[in-house]
Every structure is written in structure tokens, then in C-alpha cells.
Length: 400
Ligand SMILES: *Cc1c(COP(=O)(O)O)cnc(C)c1O
Image (cartoon, rainbow, N blue to C red):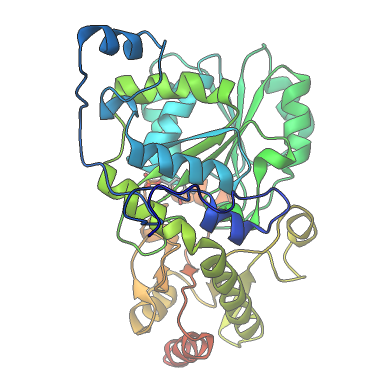
């Protein structure tokens, strides 16, 4: 009988990430369950007004109201998320965009300088909402140190980037961006969704905020929508205020589902990396393919930088089909194992044509300026047998 016994071992810093992720939240309860129950509750009762007051005024720890983030299931998830990137703290959100918007409100009001390609939703948030609010936002197509130095024209600004970026998989040097931002009194936020914490830890490279759409690799099964931010306790605090007042908390049930997904994250991501590399190599010399964009290929322009700052190259790659928009659409339509759907990071492989989906809202000229062509197909390589994925691509390309 294991009643209320202390966990035998706490995770240790020298242990590998998979061990630490699995043992990070060793729960103790009277039934001996290694995992916590799901606290599907919005509020918490107190024995008397004095004890409620103590919690509200911060004299004693305790839970008050789930929207504020005080829910044991959500806190346990956040402990797991922080552990993924060895961060002091983390916050979980109802979506990736909730995590991004709260982070930008909390740390970007003095001005935001974006470097490189951005997720379409982030671009839209900045141009349709932040700029009309009078918040200065600058977009730099790539990291040009002089331009960035000029754009950081007052203290307290925020540099924001994604690496690898969508859909060109462009790689930015996180360490260099962090140094440049800090030299100008700015912070650096990195959207780490494409890499996942298994392949890349921006905080360890000097970034101040690491942001995720947990809908993608962290969730990993295309069955939940959530977001996350990892940072120091000092940087997390103002973001938590925005989350509370914008009402961006996720449901405890979703938090429990995401906690479960985190336990298999290392093994899933390693397989995504391996499968994507096999698919990239198989496509690299296919006669119907013009170009394969994948950070793991030595021919890829960002390969050396990616090899330096990433532990794996991720599960997303982009193919440029010979021909134009119609040829690429035909390949997407002919694929049978790859599902035609936006999103990424799930166990199933997906294909999407950026010009028709994620980048449909951007003008053709702007897409071209960013190197996004009509014949690109973005693949999220899942956990199927790599041979079946490659065979599927061969049959779809063979019909051109
Ligand atoms: C999907 C995605 C987002 C937005 O996340 P949601 O969970 O859909 O809100 C942000 N950044 C990147 C890189 C993404 O792929």
C-alpha cells in the first residue's frame, strides 16, 4: 500500500530530458496514482473569510479562481512546460495566439521589431490590432544587424522572431539576436513552435521568452488547442496579468491532455526528426522536385546555423514542385497518406500549399519578396513508416 508516500526520487538536473519530463510531476495521493486527478473546477471553497483573505492578499498560497491560473491541473502542466526548457516558470494558454498576444501586450508596448518570416496569425495580430493601437511595429525580412540596431531606437522594446520559420524554414541565430537586443535594452522573444523544446531551447541561447503553439508538437495528436510561454519568473509575471484579464486560460481537461502528451514528446520528436530527414533525402533528387527546404540537408542555406543551435532538425519541410500553383495543388490532391490540412506537429502527416492556406492573406508580391512561391508544399512529417510516406510522395509526383 503506497499511501501518501513521498516520491522515491525527484528529477535531477543531470538526468536526460526524457527522464526529467516523465518524472517532473510525480504526484502523491492516497491511492498511489502516479498522476494527479483532473481538477475540473472553477472555484475553491474556504473555511472562513480570514483564510480567503489570506490567499487573496498573498499571505498564504492557495487556489482562488481558475481563470486566474490557480488550478492544480493547470499549474502541474506549467511545471512540466517550464521543465521542458529549464525555465524558471511557464504559463499555459487556450491557444498559441493567446500566448503570443499576452506576451506582446506584456513586453511589446514600447515597440516590436520582427525579424524574418512570421506565422500568418501573428502577422495579422500585429498589423490589424497592434499597429492601430499606436504600438510601433517594424518588420525586417531577415537579420541585418544595422537595420535591427536602427529599429531598436528606444529602450524597453521587444525583438520577435521564429526559427525555423514558416514555410521557408529560414534559420536565425538566436544567440546573436539576443546579444543585439540586450545591447539596446530590448528583450528577445522566440516562437519555438516549429523546433519544439526537444530540438531547440531559446532561453539557453539567451532569449527572454520562448513561446509555443502547443496545438502542434507539444500536443502532438491534432486533438487540442493550447499555447505556452516559458521565461523567468520576472518576465512571466506581467504576462500572467494579461492572461488573467484577457481571459485566456485553457480548460483543466485540456491541460491534463497536454500534460499527458508531454510525457511522450521526446520520443515523438525524435521520430518526427528521423522521418522528416528520410523524406527530405528521398525528395532531394526527385526529377519532379525543384528544391527541398529542410534545415537538416547540408545544401540548405541555414544548415550550419541550425546544426549549431538545434539538437534535431524538426518534422517540417517544404518542397518546391517543378511547375506552378496547379502542379503543386495536383500533388497535394493526389497524396493519400498525407492528409490535406493546415497545422503541423501531429502523429499524422499533413500537406498544405502555403499560397492557398497559411499565406493566402499575403499579396503575391509580398510572398515573392519573402521567397514563398506558388509551387511550394509544406509537409508536416508524422510518425507513420517513412517508407510509406516516401512511396506516397512518389505516386503523387508520378501523376504529374
Ligand atoms: C500554429 C502556430 C501559431 C498559432 O497557434 P494556435 O494554437 O493556432 O493559436 C503560432 N505560431 C506558429 C509558428 C504556429 O505554427
